[in-house]
Length: 194
Image 1 (tube, helix red, strand yellow):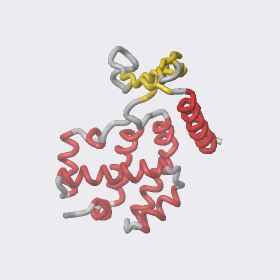
Image 2 (tube, rainbow, N blue to C red):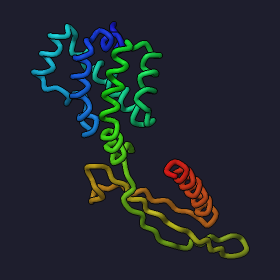
Image 3 (cartoon, one colour):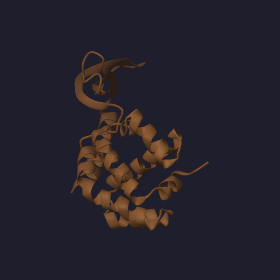
Image 4 (cartoon, rainbow, N blue to C red):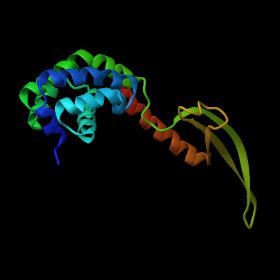
């Protein structure tokens, strides 16, 4: 079985650049690699390159993963070229990918910033306070309870009637521990954005 890197290394540099130029808009628009080429275009490319459909999909997935990884880690073009060279990619191909990355990095990173990678997003939080009564052998005890309703949505529900609700009850100590955990998360987010 041929590896993705072997397929890339076997390409002429100009073909690699052409494939990358078609792949980049797909990454920025959240389409899958299947949307890079129409069926007719894919068949012609397969014929010209002498590869299988599986090889083409492997090639596109590999290149998409390289660019996504560069976007997530905000890799500089020369660093990307070095990383690819260390992994065994041909020097000319490393430069070609780095050059495409240099031209398209801003668009890809901006597109990724607006995209959520979580399967669901928090769209609302509803809450209410209550008291639970418990009877012990000597006295009635009242425990204040906070009930939080986390309203989750995905791209299809958009918070409508099909939104998922996760309801959680906290006593005072549990709510305080939850608050401290949120403070930790906020501090980490502040570090990343500051």
